[in-house]
Image: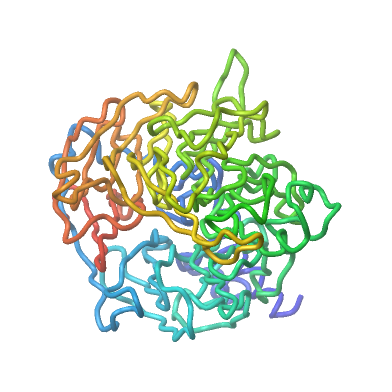
Amino acid sequence: MNRPYLLHLALCLGTSIAMFVSPALTAQKVAEPQGLAPNALKLFDQPADSWPTYNGDYSGRRFSEISQINQKNIGSLKTKWTYKIAGIAPLRGIGNPVIKSTPLMVNGVLYFTIPDHVFAVDARTGRERWRFDFEDHGGHLLGQRGVGMYGRWIYFLTPDGWFISLDSETGKERWRRKVADEKLQYFTTMSAVIVKNHVLIGVGGDAMDVRGFLEARDPETGEMQWRWWSEPLKMGDPGSETWPNQQAMDHGGGMTWLPGTYDPDLNLIYWGTGNTNPVFAGQGRKGANLYTDSIVALNPDTGKLVWYFQASPHDTHDWDNVETPVLFDMVVDGKPRKLLAQAARCGYFFVLDRITGKYLVSKPFTKSANWSKGIDERGQPIPDPDKEPKVDGSMVDVPINGATNWPPPSYSPRTKLFYVNASEGYGVAYLYDTSPEPQGYAGGAGGHFDPNSSLIALDVTNGNIKWKHIPKGEGAEGGGMSGGILTTAGDLLFTGDSDRLAAFDPANGKILWSEKLGSHLSNGPSTWSLDDQQNIIVGAGDTLYAFTLDGK
Protein backbone atom coordinates (compact mmCIF):
# COMPACT_ATOMS: atom_id res chain seq x y z
CA MET A 1 0.00 0.00 0.00
CA ASN A 2 1.60 3.30 -1.07
CA ARG A 3 1.96 6.40 1.07
CA PRO A 4 -0.26 8.75 -1.02
CA TYR A 5 -3.11 6.28 -0.70
CA LEU A 6 -2.57 6.10 3.05
CA LEU A 7 -2.64 9.87 3.26
CA HIS A 8 -5.92 10.00 1.36
CA LEU A 9 -7.42 7.26 3.53
CA ALA A 10 -6.35 8.96 6.72
CA LEU A 11 -7.89 12.25 5.66
CA CYS A 12 -11.14 10.59 4.66
CA LEU A 13 -11.39 8.81 7.99
CA GLY A 14 -10.50 11.95 9.91
CA THR A 15 -7.72 9.95 11.62
CA SER A 16 -4.19 10.89 12.60
CA ILE A 17 -1.82 10.18 9.71
CA ALA A 18 0.92 9.21 12.14
CA MET A 19 -0.75 5.95 13.09
CA PHE A 20 -0.36 4.77 9.47
CA VAL A 21 3.07 6.03 8.50
CA SER A 22 5.01 5.69 11.76
CA PRO A 23 4.71 2.32 13.55
CA ALA A 24 6.90 3.66 16.35
CA LEU A 25 4.07 5.95 17.36
CA THR A 26 1.39 3.29 17.65
CA ALA A 27 2.09 2.77 21.34
CA GLN A 28 1.67 6.48 22.03
CA LYS A 29 -1.61 8.33 22.47
CA VAL A 30 -3.01 9.27 19.07
CA ALA A 31 -3.53 13.01 18.57
CA GLU A 32 -7.03 14.45 18.37
CA PRO A 33 -8.38 13.91 14.82
CA GLN A 34 -8.14 16.93 12.58
CA GLY A 35 -10.84 17.86 10.12
CA LEU A 36 -14.28 16.44 9.54
CA ALA A 37 -14.92 12.79 8.68
CA PRO A 38 -17.12 12.60 5.54
CA ASN A 39 -19.59 10.34 7.35
CA ALA A 40 -19.95 12.80 10.27
CA LEU A 41 -23.00 14.51 8.75
CA LYS A 42 -26.37 12.99 9.63
CA LEU A 43 -30.02 13.65 8.86
CA PHE A 44 -31.56 14.18 12.32
CA ASP A 45 -28.42 14.07 14.45
CA GLN A 46 -26.85 17.50 14.78
CA PRO A 47 -23.70 16.57 16.79
CA ALA A 48 -23.30 18.14 20.22
CA ASP A 49 -19.59 18.89 19.83
CA SER A 50 -19.64 20.53 16.39
CA TRP A 51 -21.68 22.42 13.80
CA PRO A 52 -20.37 20.67 10.68
CA THR A 53 -22.47 22.16 7.87
CA TYR A 54 -24.52 25.25 7.09
CA ASN A 55 -27.69 23.98 8.80
CA GLY A 56 -25.95 21.84 11.45
CA ASP A 57 -27.17 18.55 9.97
CA TYR A 58 -28.66 17.42 6.67
CA SER A 59 -32.28 18.08 7.64
CA GLY A 60 -32.25 21.89 7.66
CA ARG A 61 -34.24 21.87 10.93
CA ARG A 62 -31.64 23.91 12.84
CA PHE A 63 -32.69 22.10 15.99
CA SER A 64 -30.16 21.00 18.62
CA GLU A 65 -30.60 18.31 21.28
CA ILE A 66 -28.28 20.23 23.64
CA SER A 67 -30.21 21.42 26.70
CA GLN A 68 -27.56 22.76 29.07
CA ILE A 69 -28.95 26.23 28.36
CA ASN A 70 -32.67 26.02 29.07
CA GLN A 71 -35.68 27.94 30.31
CA LYS A 72 -34.62 27.62 33.96
CA ASN A 73 -31.17 29.18 33.55
CA ILE A 74 -31.51 31.37 30.44
CA GLY A 75 -31.26 34.45 32.66
CA SER A 76 -27.59 33.61 33.25
CA LEU A 77 -26.68 33.71 29.54
CA LYS A 78 -23.93 36.27 28.94
CA THR A 79 -21.39 37.24 26.30
CA LYS A 80 -18.26 35.08 26.45
CA TRP A 81 -16.28 36.77 23.65
CA THR A 82 -16.70 38.82 20.49
CA TYR A 83 -14.74 38.81 17.26
CA LYS A 84 -14.92 41.97 15.17
CA ILE A 85 -13.73 41.92 11.56
CA ALA A 86 -10.89 44.39 11.21
CA GLY A 87 -8.43 45.50 8.56
CA ILE A 88 -10.81 45.04 5.61
CA ALA A 89 -11.81 47.93 3.37
CA PRO A 90 -15.52 48.60 2.81
CA LEU A 91 -16.92 46.17 0.26
CA ARG A 92 -17.49 47.56 -3.23
CA GLY A 93 -20.99 49.01 -3.46
CA ILE A 94 -21.95 47.50 -0.10
CA GLY A 95 -20.00 49.22 2.66
CA ASN A 96 -18.86 47.60 5.90
CA PRO A 97 -18.78 43.79 5.88
CA VAL A 98 -21.77 41.88 7.21
CA ILE A 99 -21.55 38.31 8.52
CA LYS A 100 -24.32 36.38 6.74
CA SER A 101 -22.54 33.02 6.96
CA THR A 102 -23.28 30.42 9.63
CA PRO A 103 -19.86 29.43 11.03
CA LEU A 104 -18.87 25.79 10.93
CA MET A 105 -17.36 24.59 14.22
CA VAL A 106 -15.06 21.56 13.97
CA ASN A 107 -12.44 20.52 16.56
CA GLY A 108 -12.60 23.80 18.43
CA VAL A 109 -12.27 26.08 15.38
CA LEU A 110 -14.92 28.29 13.77
CA TYR A 111 -14.83 28.80 9.99
CA PHE A 112 -16.91 31.58 8.45
CA THR A 113 -16.91 34.03 5.55
CA ILE A 114 -17.76 37.39 4.13
CA PRO A 115 -17.36 38.03 0.38
CA ASP A 116 -13.69 37.56 -0.63
CA HIS A 117 -12.56 36.43 2.85
CA VAL A 118 -12.50 33.23 4.94
CA PHE A 119 -11.78 33.31 8.68
CA ALA A 120 -10.67 30.64 11.17
CA VAL A 121 -11.30 31.68 14.79
CA ASP A 122 -10.60 29.81 18.03
CA ALA A 123 -14.01 28.75 19.36
CA ARG A 124 -12.83 28.97 22.97
CA THR A 125 -11.37 32.47 22.89
CA GLY A 126 -12.54 34.24 19.74
CA ARG A 127 -8.95 34.80 18.63
CA GLU A 128 -8.17 34.66 14.93
CA ARG A 129 -6.08 31.67 13.83
CA TRP A 130 -5.83 32.55 10.14
CA ARG A 131 -7.53 34.55 7.42
CA PHE A 132 -7.66 33.93 3.67
CA ASP A 133 -8.12 36.98 1.43
CA PHE A 134 -9.17 36.90 -2.20
CA GLU A 135 -9.45 39.72 -4.73
CA ASP A 136 -12.47 39.25 -6.96
CA HIS A 137 -12.87 40.85 -10.37
CA GLY A 138 -16.39 42.12 -10.71
CA GLY A 139 -18.33 39.67 -8.57
CA HIS A 140 -21.50 40.41 -6.58
CA LEU A 141 -20.59 41.30 -2.97
CA LEU A 142 -24.05 41.36 -1.43
CA GLY A 143 -23.43 38.32 0.79
CA GLN A 144 -21.65 35.02 1.40
CA ARG A 145 -23.26 32.15 3.32
CA GLY A 146 -20.19 30.19 4.46
CA VAL A 147 -18.00 27.20 3.74
CA GLY A 148 -18.26 23.43 3.39
CA MET A 149 -15.80 20.94 4.87
CA TYR A 150 -14.59 17.46 3.84
CA GLY A 151 -11.76 15.88 5.83
CA ARG A 152 -9.38 18.72 6.59
CA TRP A 153 -10.32 20.65 3.45
CA ILE A 154 -12.39 23.81 3.35
CA TYR A 155 -14.45 24.76 0.26
CA PHE A 156 -15.86 28.17 -0.57
CA LEU A 157 -17.05 30.24 -3.51
CA THR A 158 -15.78 33.68 -4.43
CA PRO A 159 -18.16 36.39 -5.69
CA ASP A 160 -16.79 36.09 -9.23
CA GLY A 161 -17.25 32.36 -9.74
CA TRP A 162 -14.12 30.68 -8.35
CA PHE A 163 -14.46 27.47 -6.37
CA ILE A 164 -11.52 27.31 -3.95
CA SER A 165 -10.24 24.65 -1.54
CA LEU A 166 -8.13 25.55 1.52
CA ASP A 167 -6.24 23.59 4.16
CA SER A 168 -8.32 24.06 7.32
CA GLU A 169 -5.25 24.02 9.57
CA THR A 170 -3.27 26.72 7.77
CA GLY A 171 -5.65 28.54 5.43
CA LYS A 172 -3.36 27.84 2.50
CA GLU A 173 -4.94 27.36 -0.90
CA ARG A 174 -4.93 23.86 -2.39
CA TRP A 175 -6.48 24.66 -5.76
CA ARG A 176 -9.10 26.77 -7.49
CA ARG A 177 -11.54 26.01 -10.30
CA LYS A 178 -13.63 28.45 -12.32
CA VAL A 179 -17.31 27.44 -12.10
CA ALA A 180 -19.26 30.49 -13.36
CA ASP A 181 -18.60 33.54 -15.53
CA GLU A 182 -19.11 36.84 -13.71
CA LYS A 183 -19.21 38.62 -17.09
CA LEU A 184 -22.56 36.90 -17.65
CA GLN A 185 -23.67 38.28 -14.26
CA TYR A 186 -23.44 34.96 -12.47
CA PHE A 187 -22.45 35.40 -8.85
CA THR A 188 -21.56 32.72 -6.32
CA THR A 189 -22.49 33.26 -2.67
CA MET A 190 -23.72 29.96 -1.25
CA SER A 191 -22.18 27.66 1.34
CA ALA A 192 -21.03 24.38 -0.23
CA VAL A 193 -22.84 21.22 0.91
CA ILE A 194 -20.95 17.92 1.21
CA VAL A 195 -22.88 14.75 0.35
CA LYS A 196 -20.78 11.57 0.26
CA ASN A 197 -17.96 12.31 -2.18
CA HIS A 198 -19.74 15.28 -3.78
CA VAL A 199 -19.31 18.98 -3.07
CA LEU A 200 -22.58 20.60 -4.13
CA ILE A 201 -22.49 24.23 -5.26
CA GLY A 202 -25.01 26.57 -6.87
CA VAL A 203 -25.11 30.00 -8.48
CA GLY A 204 -26.97 33.29 -8.37
CA GLY A 205 -27.69 35.90 -11.06
CA ASP A 206 -30.55 37.94 -12.51
CA ALA A 207 -29.71 40.75 -14.88
CA MET A 208 -28.36 38.94 -17.96
CA ASP A 209 -31.05 36.27 -18.33
CA VAL A 210 -28.84 33.20 -17.96
CA ARG A 211 -29.74 29.65 -16.97
CA GLY A 212 -29.41 28.57 -13.36
CA PHE A 213 -27.62 25.36 -12.44
CA LEU A 214 -26.53 23.15 -9.57
CA GLU A 215 -23.45 21.00 -9.80
CA ALA A 216 -21.38 18.42 -7.94
CA ARG A 217 -17.59 18.71 -7.71
CA ASP A 218 -14.93 16.18 -6.72
CA PRO A 219 -13.63 17.07 -3.21
CA GLU A 220 -10.07 16.01 -4.08
CA THR A 221 -9.65 17.68 -7.46
CA GLY A 222 -12.48 20.17 -7.80
CA GLU A 223 -13.44 18.70 -11.18
CA MET A 224 -17.11 18.66 -12.12
CA GLN A 225 -18.98 15.37 -11.61
CA TRP A 226 -22.37 16.47 -12.92
CA ARG A 227 -24.44 19.59 -13.62
CA TRP A 228 -28.21 19.95 -13.39
CA TRP A 229 -29.78 22.86 -15.26
CA SER A 230 -32.83 24.72 -13.93
CA GLU A 231 -34.49 24.56 -17.37
CA PRO A 232 -34.77 21.70 -19.86
CA LEU A 233 -31.90 21.78 -22.34
CA LYS A 234 -33.98 21.50 -25.50
CA MET A 235 -37.56 21.57 -26.69
CA GLY A 236 -39.12 18.14 -26.36
CA ASP A 237 -37.42 17.42 -23.04
CA PRO A 238 -39.71 16.98 -19.98
CA GLY A 239 -40.74 20.43 -18.77
CA SER A 240 -40.05 22.19 -22.08
CA GLU A 241 -43.79 22.28 -22.75
CA THR A 242 -43.98 24.98 -20.04
CA TRP A 243 -41.90 27.34 -22.22
CA PRO A 244 -42.93 28.93 -25.50
CA ASN A 245 -39.63 28.40 -27.31
CA GLN A 246 -35.94 27.52 -26.99
CA GLN A 247 -34.81 31.12 -26.63
CA ALA A 248 -37.03 31.80 -23.62
CA MET A 249 -35.90 28.55 -22.03
CA ASP A 250 -32.20 29.32 -22.59
CA HIS A 251 -32.53 32.61 -20.67
CA GLY A 252 -34.91 31.47 -17.97
CA GLY A 253 -32.99 31.97 -14.69
CA GLY A 254 -33.82 29.68 -11.75
CA MET A 255 -30.71 30.26 -9.64
CA THR A 256 -29.65 27.91 -6.84
CA TRP A 257 -27.97 30.28 -4.38
CA LEU A 258 -28.89 28.79 -0.99
CA PRO A 259 -27.86 25.39 0.45
CA GLY A 260 -30.32 22.52 0.13
CA THR A 261 -30.93 19.47 2.32
CA TYR A 262 -30.37 15.71 1.98
CA ASP A 263 -31.99 12.43 3.02
CA PRO A 264 -29.32 9.67 3.14
CA ASP A 265 -31.92 6.89 3.37
CA LEU A 266 -33.69 8.01 0.20
CA ASN A 267 -30.43 9.29 -1.33
CA LEU A 268 -32.15 12.48 -2.47
CA ILE A 269 -31.07 16.10 -2.25
CA TYR A 270 -33.74 18.80 -2.03
CA TRP A 271 -33.00 22.20 -3.51
CA GLY A 272 -34.86 25.43 -4.10
CA THR A 273 -34.59 27.29 -7.40
CA GLY A 274 -34.84 31.02 -7.96
CA ASN A 275 -37.05 33.40 -9.92
CA THR A 276 -37.74 33.23 -13.64
CA ASN A 277 -36.14 35.66 -16.09
CA PRO A 278 -36.95 38.23 -17.40
CA VAL A 279 -37.83 39.00 -13.80
CA PHE A 280 -40.97 41.17 -13.95
CA ALA A 281 -42.06 40.63 -17.56
CA GLY A 282 -43.79 37.37 -18.44
CA GLN A 283 -45.18 38.10 -21.89
CA GLY A 284 -42.21 36.53 -23.69
CA ARG A 285 -42.24 33.31 -21.63
CA LYS A 286 -45.86 32.25 -21.34
CA GLY A 287 -46.32 29.05 -19.34
CA ALA A 288 -45.31 27.75 -15.92
CA ASN A 289 -41.56 27.97 -16.77
CA LEU A 290 -40.19 24.81 -15.16
CA TYR A 291 -38.04 24.25 -13.19
CA THR A 292 -37.77 27.80 -11.89
CA ASP A 293 -39.29 28.80 -8.52
CA SER A 294 -39.45 25.14 -7.52
CA ILE A 295 -38.34 22.58 -4.99
CA VAL A 296 -36.53 19.82 -6.85
CA ALA A 297 -35.46 16.37 -5.60
CA LEU A 298 -32.31 15.11 -7.31
CA ASN A 299 -30.12 12.02 -7.11
CA PRO A 300 -26.81 13.31 -5.66
CA ASP A 301 -24.75 10.73 -7.56
CA THR A 302 -26.09 11.60 -11.01
CA GLY A 303 -27.92 14.93 -10.78
CA LYS A 304 -31.04 13.30 -12.25
CA LEU A 305 -34.40 14.85 -11.40
CA VAL A 306 -36.69 12.57 -9.35
CA TRP A 307 -39.58 14.94 -8.65
CA TYR A 308 -40.41 18.65 -8.50
CA PHE A 309 -42.95 20.96 -6.91
CA GLN A 310 -43.37 24.48 -8.31
CA ALA A 311 -44.11 27.03 -5.60
CA SER A 312 -44.61 30.04 -7.87
CA PRO A 313 -45.50 29.06 -11.45
CA HIS A 314 -44.76 31.72 -14.07
CA ASP A 315 -43.22 34.00 -11.45
CA THR A 316 -43.34 37.72 -12.34
CA HIS A 317 -42.57 39.13 -8.87
CA ASP A 318 -38.93 38.10 -8.19
CA TRP A 319 -39.95 35.47 -5.61
CA ASP A 320 -36.92 33.18 -5.51
CA ASN A 321 -37.97 29.82 -4.10
CA VAL A 322 -34.55 29.06 -2.62
CA GLU A 323 -35.76 29.06 1.01
CA THR A 324 -34.61 25.99 2.97
CA PRO A 325 -36.58 22.77 2.30
CA VAL A 326 -36.74 21.47 5.91
CA LEU A 327 -36.96 17.69 6.43
CA PHE A 328 -38.79 15.99 9.30
CA ASP A 329 -40.67 12.77 10.07
CA MET A 330 -44.15 12.61 11.57
CA VAL A 331 -47.05 10.22 12.02
CA VAL A 332 -49.98 11.39 9.86
CA ASP A 333 -53.33 9.60 10.02
CA GLY A 334 -51.68 6.77 11.95
CA LYS A 335 -48.89 6.27 9.39
CA PRO A 336 -45.24 7.37 9.60
CA ARG A 337 -44.44 9.90 6.88
CA LYS A 338 -41.20 11.39 5.56
CA LEU A 339 -42.01 15.05 5.04
CA LEU A 340 -40.54 18.32 3.78
CA ALA A 341 -41.70 21.83 4.71
CA GLN A 342 -40.94 25.21 3.21
CA ALA A 343 -42.07 28.75 3.97
CA ALA A 344 -41.75 30.27 0.51
CA ARG A 345 -41.01 33.82 -0.52
CA CYS A 346 -44.29 33.92 -2.48
CA GLY A 347 -46.21 33.80 0.84
CA TYR A 348 -47.23 30.12 0.84
CA PHE A 349 -46.35 27.42 3.37
CA PHE A 350 -45.93 23.95 1.88
CA VAL A 351 -45.65 20.51 3.43
CA LEU A 352 -44.77 17.74 0.96
CA ASP A 353 -44.11 14.02 1.03
CA ARG A 354 -40.37 14.01 0.39
CA ILE A 355 -40.49 10.59 -1.27
CA THR A 356 -42.99 11.58 -3.95
CA GLY A 357 -43.33 15.38 -3.83
CA LYS A 358 -47.09 15.14 -3.24
CA TYR A 359 -48.49 17.91 -1.07
CA LEU A 360 -50.16 17.68 2.32
CA VAL A 361 -50.38 21.42 3.06
CA SER A 362 -50.43 24.38 0.68
CA LYS A 363 -51.58 27.52 2.44
CA PRO A 364 -50.69 31.23 2.63
CA PHE A 365 -48.90 32.21 5.85
CA THR A 366 -49.03 36.01 5.38
CA LYS A 367 -52.36 37.61 4.48
CA SER A 368 -54.03 35.91 1.49
CA ALA A 369 -51.26 35.76 -1.14
CA ASN A 370 -53.77 37.34 -3.52
CA TRP A 371 -51.42 36.98 -6.50
CA SER A 372 -52.88 33.45 -6.77
CA LYS A 373 -56.40 32.23 -7.46
CA GLY A 374 -56.03 29.15 -5.27
CA ILE A 375 -54.15 25.89 -5.79
CA ASP A 376 -54.22 23.20 -8.46
CA GLU A 377 -54.54 19.43 -8.00
CA ARG A 378 -50.84 19.21 -7.07
CA GLY A 379 -51.15 21.91 -4.40
CA GLN A 380 -49.27 24.43 -6.54
CA PRO A 381 -50.58 28.04 -6.53
CA ILE A 382 -52.44 29.20 -9.63
CA PRO A 383 -51.19 32.67 -10.63
CA ASP A 384 -53.77 35.38 -11.25
CA PRO A 385 -52.97 37.19 -14.55
CA ASP A 386 -54.62 40.35 -13.18
CA LYS A 387 -51.90 40.57 -10.49
CA GLU A 388 -48.98 40.49 -12.91
CA PRO A 389 -46.89 43.70 -13.11
CA LYS A 390 -48.48 46.51 -15.15
CA VAL A 391 -47.19 49.78 -16.55
CA ASP A 392 -49.33 51.68 -14.03
CA GLY A 393 -48.64 49.19 -11.24
CA SER A 394 -50.31 46.13 -9.75
CA MET A 395 -50.73 45.75 -5.99
CA VAL A 396 -50.35 42.41 -4.23
CA ASP A 397 -50.55 41.57 -0.52
CA VAL A 398 -46.99 40.24 -0.39
CA PRO A 399 -44.18 42.77 0.30
CA ILE A 400 -41.84 43.72 -2.53
CA ASN A 401 -39.02 41.60 -1.07
CA GLY A 402 -41.27 38.62 -0.45
CA ALA A 403 -43.04 37.13 2.55
CA THR A 404 -39.71 35.76 3.77
CA ASN A 405 -36.19 35.57 2.40
CA TRP A 406 -32.88 33.71 2.82
CA PRO A 407 -32.44 33.77 6.66
CA PRO A 408 -32.92 30.14 7.72
CA PRO A 409 -36.08 28.90 9.48
CA SER A 410 -36.26 26.15 12.10
CA TYR A 411 -38.43 23.15 12.99
CA SER A 412 -38.66 21.71 16.49
CA PRO A 413 -39.64 18.03 16.88
CA ARG A 414 -40.60 18.88 20.48
CA THR A 415 -43.34 21.33 19.54
CA LYS A 416 -43.93 20.07 15.97
CA LEU A 417 -43.95 23.69 14.87
CA PHE A 418 -42.17 25.38 11.97
CA TYR A 419 -40.71 28.82 12.70
CA VAL A 420 -40.00 31.57 10.17
CA ASN A 421 -39.21 35.28 10.27
CA ALA A 422 -41.82 36.72 7.96
CA SER A 423 -42.81 40.04 6.38
CA GLU A 424 -46.37 41.18 5.77
CA GLY A 425 -47.63 44.15 3.83
CA TYR A 426 -48.41 45.25 0.29
CA GLY A 427 -46.17 45.87 -2.71
CA VAL A 428 -46.71 47.33 -6.18
CA ALA A 429 -45.12 45.68 -9.22
CA TYR A 430 -44.46 47.67 -12.42
CA LEU A 431 -43.83 46.60 -16.01
CA TYR A 432 -41.24 48.74 -17.83
CA ASP A 433 -40.65 46.74 -21.03
CA THR A 434 -43.82 45.87 -22.94
CA SER A 435 -42.05 44.44 -26.01
CA PRO A 436 -42.72 40.82 -27.09
CA GLU A 437 -39.24 39.70 -26.02
CA PRO A 438 -38.18 41.75 -22.97
CA GLN A 439 -34.81 41.32 -21.29
CA GLY A 440 -33.27 41.78 -17.85
CA TYR A 441 -35.53 42.86 -15.02
CA ALA A 442 -37.93 44.56 -17.48
CA GLY A 443 -39.79 46.01 -14.53
CA GLY A 444 -39.53 46.61 -10.83
CA ALA A 445 -41.37 46.82 -7.53
CA GLY A 446 -41.97 49.74 -5.22
CA GLY A 447 -43.65 50.58 -1.98
CA HIS A 448 -43.95 48.60 1.20
CA PHE A 449 -47.34 49.50 2.58
CA ASP A 450 -48.65 48.52 6.00
CA PRO A 451 -45.35 46.79 6.89
CA ASN A 452 -45.28 44.17 9.59
CA SER A 453 -42.29 41.99 10.45
CA SER A 454 -43.02 39.00 12.64
CA LEU A 455 -41.82 35.67 13.98
CA ILE A 456 -44.44 33.08 13.05
CA ALA A 457 -44.96 29.56 14.42
CA LEU A 458 -46.78 27.31 11.93
CA ASP A 459 -48.56 24.03 12.64
CA VAL A 460 -47.10 21.61 10.07
CA THR A 461 -50.24 19.49 10.02
CA ASN A 462 -52.47 22.21 8.58
CA GLY A 463 -50.44 25.40 8.03
CA ASN A 464 -52.32 27.33 10.72
CA ILE A 465 -50.50 30.01 12.68
CA LYS A 466 -50.02 28.76 16.25
CA TRP A 467 -48.61 32.08 17.50
CA LYS A 468 -47.07 35.26 16.15
CA HIS A 469 -44.60 37.72 17.69
CA ILE A 470 -44.48 41.28 16.35
CA PRO A 471 -41.41 43.12 17.66
CA LYS A 472 -41.54 46.52 19.31
CA GLY A 473 -40.28 49.43 17.24
CA GLU A 474 -41.93 48.12 14.08
CA GLY A 475 -42.82 50.66 11.38
CA ALA A 476 -41.55 54.21 11.87
CA GLU A 477 -38.85 53.22 14.37
CA GLY A 478 -37.41 50.66 11.94
CA GLY A 479 -37.60 47.56 14.10
CA GLY A 480 -38.23 44.05 12.88
CA MET A 481 -37.20 40.44 13.13
CA SER A 482 -33.67 39.77 11.94
CA GLY A 483 -31.46 36.83 11.03
CA GLY A 484 -32.33 33.16 11.11
CA ILE A 485 -33.76 30.88 13.79
CA LEU A 486 -32.40 28.16 16.09
CA THR A 487 -34.43 25.87 18.35
CA THR A 488 -33.06 23.59 21.09
CA ALA A 489 -34.04 20.79 23.45
CA GLY A 490 -33.71 23.37 26.25
CA ASP A 491 -37.13 24.54 25.03
CA LEU A 492 -35.68 27.71 23.61
CA LEU A 493 -35.87 29.54 20.29
CA PHE A 494 -33.14 32.04 19.39
CA THR A 495 -33.46 34.75 16.76
CA GLY A 496 -33.02 38.49 16.24
CA ASP A 497 -35.66 40.87 17.60
CA SER A 498 -34.68 44.25 16.11
CA ASP A 499 -31.07 44.71 17.33
CA ARG A 500 -31.37 42.18 20.15
CA LEU A 501 -30.63 38.49 20.32
CA ALA A 502 -33.74 37.07 21.95
CA ALA A 503 -34.65 33.70 23.43
CA PHE A 504 -38.32 32.74 23.12
CA ASP A 505 -40.47 29.98 24.50
CA PRO A 506 -41.11 28.03 21.27
CA ALA A 507 -44.48 26.83 22.55
CA ASN A 508 -46.09 30.26 22.91
CA GLY A 509 -43.71 33.00 21.65
CA LYS A 510 -43.01 34.57 25.04
CA ILE A 511 -39.62 36.32 25.27
CA LEU A 512 -37.57 34.79 28.11
CA TRP A 513 -34.27 36.66 27.65
CA SER A 514 -32.65 39.19 25.34
CA GLU A 515 -29.42 41.13 24.92
CA LYS A 516 -28.74 44.13 22.74
CA LEU A 517 -26.15 43.64 19.99
CA GLY A 518 -24.19 46.22 18.03
CA SER A 519 -26.38 45.62 14.98
CA HIS A 520 -29.33 43.55 13.78
CA LEU A 521 -28.72 39.81 13.74
CA SER A 522 -27.35 39.04 10.27
CA ASN A 523 -26.91 35.24 10.12
CA GLY A 524 -28.46 32.02 11.37
CA PRO A 525 -27.70 31.33 15.06
CA SER A 526 -25.97 28.05 15.89
CA THR A 527 -25.01 26.09 19.00
CA TRP A 528 -22.53 23.44 20.09
CA SER A 529 -20.82 22.17 23.23
CA LEU A 530 -17.08 22.58 23.85
CA ASP A 531 -15.34 21.56 27.09
CA ASP A 532 -18.77 20.54 28.43
CA GLN A 533 -20.10 24.07 27.90
CA GLN A 534 -22.91 24.98 25.51
CA ASN A 535 -22.25 28.01 23.31
CA ILE A 536 -24.69 30.11 21.27
CA ILE A 537 -23.03 31.79 18.27
CA VAL A 538 -24.54 34.68 16.29
CA GLY A 539 -23.35 37.24 13.77
CA ALA A 540 -24.52 40.86 13.88
CA GLY A 541 -23.05 43.19 11.28
CA ASP A 542 -19.27 42.83 11.29
CA THR A 543 -19.09 41.08 14.68
CA LEU A 544 -19.39 37.46 15.82
CA TYR A 545 -20.74 36.90 19.35
CA ALA A 546 -20.37 33.83 21.60
CA PHE A 547 -22.75 33.41 24.55
CA THR A 548 -22.48 30.95 27.45
CA LEU A 549 -23.95 30.62 30.92
CA ASP A 550 -22.37 33.31 33.11
CA GLY A 551 -20.10 34.21 30.18
CA LYS A 552 -17.39 31.76 31.25
